[in-house]
Length: 232
Image (cartoon, rainbow, N blue to C red; front, side, top):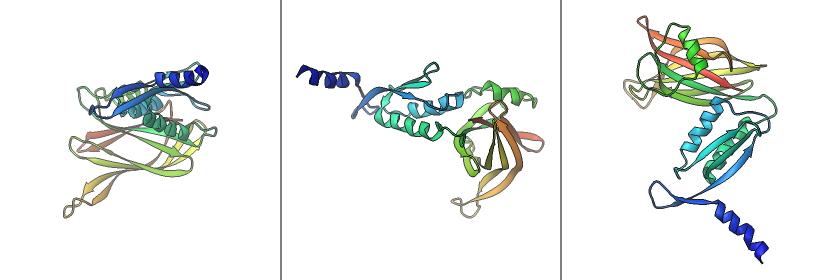
């Protein structure tokens, strides 16, 4: 009888019960190890996992990546753990058929902002720009030989841009051809509808060590910088 009860007791003991932010519904938090098979966790992947974990309503969720075992130790609610698993299942594949693009909308200005990866900042400085701030950030999964798009917005002034691309994987690089940036503008008579203004249309190649930086200008001044990094 003791042998049957003990595993159940240990299972219940391993769960931590904390209050939800509203203080009404208790959140059951548990710890689980997720073993990765084909990929390692880059800074971009870790950032996406962090964004998922930060949304956990328990307020107690954490994760740690163990390089030696190539595993993720996550403490969170079942819902958050399953969200992380679904995300990892999409990219932890044997063949190189998908990658994650991190799109930064940047502005040339001083002040505090989200951190900019050093490899991206290095390329921005090559353009002669030393002070930039992150206005917005978006993530999109791209597949080989497929078209995808992502919308990114400046929340301060409402400016919206749509990036469309066709990805072609070539070893350690990805050819983005065509690569297009549209500015989305509300119609004058009906602001529920948006019209597209073509800003950039050109082929580019991107690698993990060589991110893409594009400046959008008006009146000889840079309005925005688009920084795009890839994690394969």
